Each structure stands twice: as structure tokens, then as C-alpha cells.
Length: 93
Image (cartoon, rainbow, N blue to C red; front, top):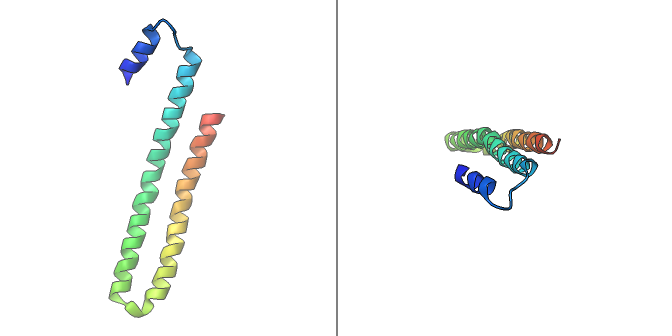
């Protein structure tokens, strides 16, 4: 990747530094959102795994476990959306 920047800097049609900074900002926002999505992804996996375990142990309470699972997934997914919004705001401000 650094070779690409070195080629862009040494080419006859030089890229303006502000364009490079905008591009690096977009790359940073993408990496930041990817990092912000790791935690909720792990959290959803834990919530679903524990709900399946609870349903397997007590099948008669599967309805309650399923409802609680979906609530847990919704709250965990909200964290991913917050991370997405924060990095979009950081990129465009």
C-alpha cells in the first residue's frame, strides 16, 4: 500500500495532499467501523449460543428464551449501529 502512495507521489500527475488525506480518512473510517463491528458480532454469537443452550435444556421455556434472545440481539446490534454513525460523523466533520 505504501508503494502505491510512493508511485502516486513520484508520478508526473501528482495527487494533491488533500486528496490523499481524504482517501486515508476513508480508509481509517472503514477500519474503525470494522473494529467497532467485532464486539457486537461476538456479543450476538454469545447471546444466540446461550439461548440455544437454554432451549435445549428446557424446551418448555423456548418461547421466553427466544424472546429474550431477540431483545439481546437488538441491543447488541444497536452498538454496531452506534459505531457506524460515530465513524461516519468523524469522517465527514
